[in-house]
Image (cartoon, rainbow, N blue to C red):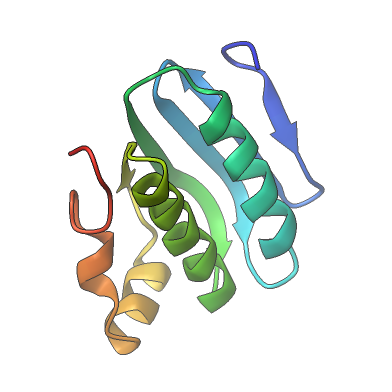
Length: 115
């Protein structure tokens, strides 16, 4: 996928805005989770960068399904020995992660290989 090329679903867009920087825009909810997971994996796999940063600053809505998507992307990084980290997580996702006791997995290097 060329830099800046976006993969889009009705509720979520995921693109590599620059080498190694993946931007998620829109909703990470139950309604978009399946598509977001698949699109995110495609974008992550197509990147040539050694370190990948997923920027969630443009996420407008998120729920526990969105959290599961992000945790899956981190697990993908571990399986592929790629460094994946998350930035600008919405407060709602952080709250769900704390309640679910998985907030430690969202910290840089905690769930990703190659850090």
